[in-house]
Length: 202
Length: 202
Image (cartoon, rainbow over all chains, first blue to last red; front, side, top):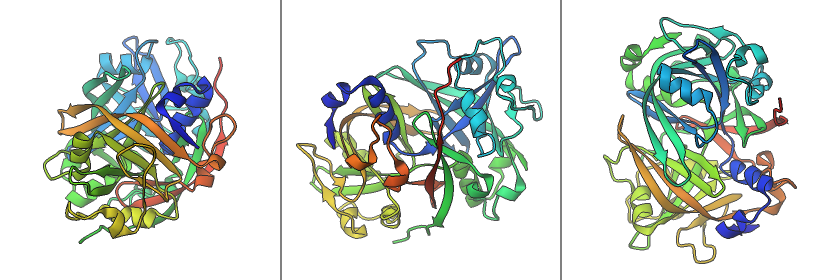
């Protein structure tokens, strides 16, 4: 099937959402933990966390346009800290439930049955059940003019990861961590390592 | 293991590259096809393609700082068009070979043994062997001040996908497409659908 831009715009709305969201393939999925000015914890699932740099370590998140209330974004802007937590097979069904539009006064940790965890003096909550936890501080943001989405950049302040998941050279064993991935907004995939390819020297 | 920002900076360079690149989990991996002003095709592997929007459809790519020659970036800026091609199990070893630093005068299609394909009047080459092909035009870019990486945004102009991979409601069957994912720069994973979770209504 070949579809032009014009034909894509003419597709049924939900057909288009599924197709275009899944076009870029299977991607990482994470739980973002934040805390409001009122001290209420928030937990939300995102499929748009991106690696920005390793030295110094930075991560990014794409936010949809701020036309509706976005607790996660607002909390990051006022508190300055957020956590990025990996989603394992054991918790992905609970993680998916955080996509519901709950009132800001309620913590999604309580609603879906995940446990808040804190580390050092970092103010945002981590997910105790997540094998890989990243504490991040707000750094900068960019408004994408094409459609008013936002790229938010954060600096990695702290990471917590089970020693058993890290190989001798720093590689992370995501099969052992049972990290799940997602296509679109609803299709969850498990990951199985096929091979590590050697650095290509020419 | 708990590591602070300062401790991360003190890690061995390659240990840090592996750890931080793999921290955000298993993500999509794609071949970007471009053409230079001199008419030479270029093909390069990226693990930083992001979904930006479905209506109208936009995609993004994160580029590392332009401190060395970046053929893909230069070709996109001068030609205006590029292709994003999915990587299946059948071609992932060839796809990985495009990460070598070959001279700009040589086409990676020829070096790694993948086939150039064209569609309508779209000027950038697609990868014939890729199950999902996306033709994209340059839209805008953002310089991330924290570390001089770039986010480049493109508009989806055309998509080509095997009818057998699209379900009735627009979902794409990435298990059937045998789409691979990557952790870091070298660890390739296969994807197996676990389940589709229902939209969360509250």
